[in-house]
Amino acid sequence: MSKIARNYKPSMRRGTFKKINNMNIHVLAVGNGMPVVLIHGFMGMTYDWRFNIQELGKHFSVYALDLPGFGYSDKPLNYDYSSNGYAEFIASFLDAHRIERAVLVGNSMGGQIALMSCLKYPERVAGLVLIDSGGYPQSVEFLPFKLLRLPAIGEISMALLNRTVIKIMLIKGIYFDGSFATDGVINDYHRVYGTANARKTPPIIMRNIMKDEAYIASCLNDIKCPTLIIWGAEDRVISPSRAEMFHRDIRSASLLMVPEAGHMPQVDKPDVVNKAIIKFLSEEI
Image (cartoon, rainbow, N blue to C red; front, top):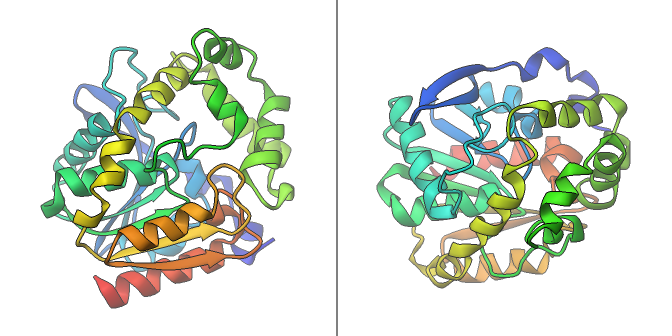
């Protein structure tokens, strides 16, 4: 376990709420300098960046948020949870914080949202960091996530979600290093599912987020901003082969494969990921 992980304190994850598009959005903001927005993945939240926020905040203005439908942000059932809808939300998020241009750092589904934001609002995106990103059709290989796409089965799966299921998902799917799935971490993720609509939105989001994948994949050559692709070499949710595809299709991209890391290399290897992001932003943006 890294030094950052060993020294992590729960107080680091406390944020505030900001009203954006009539929704209460949970945000954690630290630091000064170039604006950097951290966008979590499916069923994630600001907590996904617990080993990154403070370190990146020493160099940049860092904003981590819980996307609508996840974490401690509002979870309306009638929201546009497509990549396009989320891209519009990211633009509103930037407006609410008076940010003209920002670097978008996205993990998994968050990477897909970052890509769509760049395609839709290229003038607002100074650079991209894609961490084990979605964006290609049929990318997700992790069975629990695939089940959420299915009518009724997705709803039943969420109703049955408990601490044991979360632990299995973290160890078997998300993390390479299962020691990160401590009781404290499991409780932090499980606690969210006591908030309003938290068990209802994931199937809705999983079915809607797929709608724009073919479009995004077809437009990757249009991305011109500096792009860093970071990928856990042992990812069991989205195959590392997708990293090579992004590297091929985004002409401005560089690629870093992270050994002994899974779908969240920012958790498995935070020292490596933080150093890579800081170097990339300092030299390329």
